[in-house]
Length: 137
Image 1: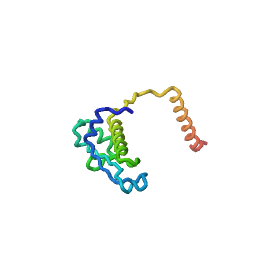
Image 2: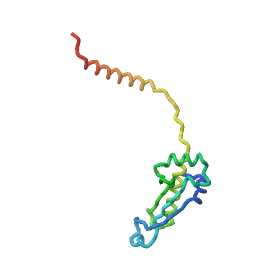
Image 3: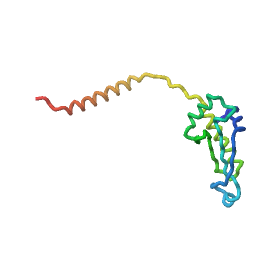
């Protein structure tokens, strides 16, 4: 997936925090801060327009903190640099997907076969209900 260069400019507005990882690495885990946490405050971004900010708030609302901050974490690699690249790449993909406009649905009519199948279902259901009635003497 090709990342839009405009979203790569957002990398200047990202804050990174490192800490000890729980991932692979043996004793290296106990000595090196290889876990990388990316933080991005959508509301404080200077590069995003108000419409883009509103779109991000709406589409990413389940991933945001109460302060409107997006937090992504990577600790899969033993290297801090690889984890930083990983989390930055994931951030760029997430922003790209969130800001991509959705396709509009084209209204279509049901096919002849679908209409006939629906009518058959209605007749069948009607027959079942008809058989539940008490017989007239």
